[in-house]
Image (cartoon, rainbow, N blue to C red; front, side, top):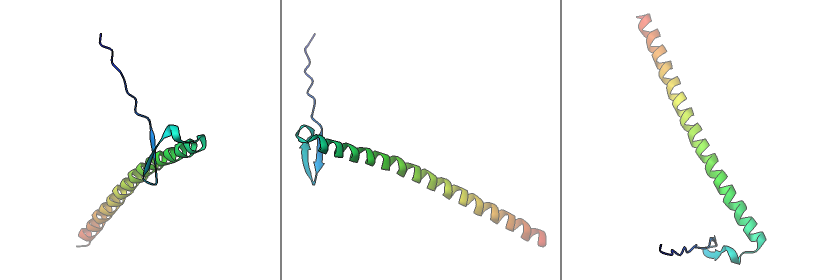
Length: 80
């Protein structure tokens, strides 16, 4: 069997456009970077929920408008 070497690339953090290796960060800086990463992930989740809710609202509003038009047309046709 061939011996395969695996090269693992070190994680980096981009700060003000500069890539910095995670191993060069202090524990406090790693903590801050972790908090930022988690907050961005949470923001993404929340944005997806907002997008979904916006689509639901738009759908129900369109249905409400359509049914209102249908009722109005029925009333008008009955008046003739």
